[in-house]
Structure formats: C-alpha cells, structure tokens
Image (cartoon, rainbow, N blue to C red; front, side, top):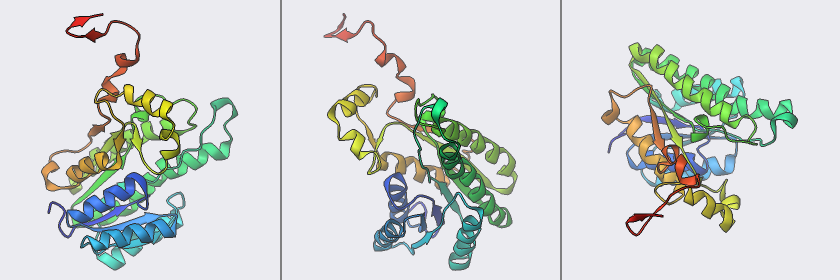
Length: 265
C-alpha cells in the first residue's frame, strides 16, 4: 500500500474524478477526508471508502468561503491529527460567451476553482510546514493549456491553477512540501454524462484523442496516487498529462494527408 496511514483531503470528492481519487487512495491505505458541498454524495463516498478499510470522514464545506475552509482544515486536524495530502479538485463551470458572461458567473468559477484551491492549500500548508512534509495535487486541465471557448472563466482558472502549482512547489519545497498538477483531457464522469451520451459529441471528441478513447476518472486516479506517494518524492512543480495524448494531437483534427494501408493518401 503506497499511501498507508496517510491523511488525505480531497475537495469535490463526492462524485466524478474526486470520488475515483478518494476510492483509489483508500485502496492504497490512506485515511481520506471527503469534502463536498453535497452531504449525500460526500457521505456515500466516505462510506464506500470505509468499506475499503479507510478511516474515512465526510466534511461538508464550500471551498469558495474562507470560513468553511478554516473549519474544514480544523476538522481534519482535530479528527485525524495531521494532514499529509491535499487534492484540490472542486470545480464548477458556469458556461457562457465572454461578451455576455455575468460577473457572478465569472466569480463562481474563480472562487471555487482557483481562489478555493489557494485558500485550502494555504490553510493546510500551515500544518504541513510544521510537520515538515506534505503533498498537494491540483487537478488542472488541458483547458489550462489551450483556451476552452464558451466555458466562461474555466480556462483562465485552470491556467492559473497550473501557475499556482509551480509557485507552491518553489516556495514550499524548503519545508518538505511537494506540489504537482494533473491536466486531464476529455473525461467521462456523471457530470459530463449528458454530453457524452450524444453519440455525435462522443465520437467527435474520441477522434481527437490519439489513444482513441475518452478517459475516465480512474485514468486520473492513477497519476494522483503516484504524485501523492513516495515514488514521486523528487517530483515537484510538474504537470502530469492524463489526456490520451490530446495535448500533442492537434494535427489529428487538421485536414490533410492520412496514412492508409501503409501509404499516404
């Protein structure tokens, strides 16, 4: 077990990618704190983690609110005595065209996805600095590398999260804290199921991935384990792509020559 007895906090851990990371960490021996704004999904995921042997805990808190964040971290320390791993996964996309995007929509995505990640990390880092160890895993996105149109502030948030990761890595390395980011590509989750259920959308996206398939939350959980465990002890400030080659597959979608049967058409 690569995370045996580590205390891990996963924000937005009730469903989707967050849930898959929670369960993967539990299988690796971590005691996982499941944070979500939805009590039902947080409790259900914590129970599933407990069934895998984790001393799991569900904590409802809104990472867009500093009061909630402070209570969240205080609860982790009170109930588990330390905090070894933080996975900043909580996110909410409020889509819209830039010229018509309401300020509140911009603020919602920013406050949860970027400001929240900063404040959660900051609150946890105070304890990690004292214990001279800790790991932060930020769930960014390929949208932080390329603009995702009509998704509001989403691309801006994910680009900012990548830079925040590098800053955390640089400033906190002397305290034994590592920070890395994962950049998922197309991932099928309960939150995106309605979109991927459309065969045309699914097939169009699948074709844009060199590996030929849309990913799952489990495809993100693997890198999240690696970045949290001692196998990556010399890795910090890095971006780990989990996109099936999407970030390097631009020319798959550009009209031009194609190989067919050993020849170029």
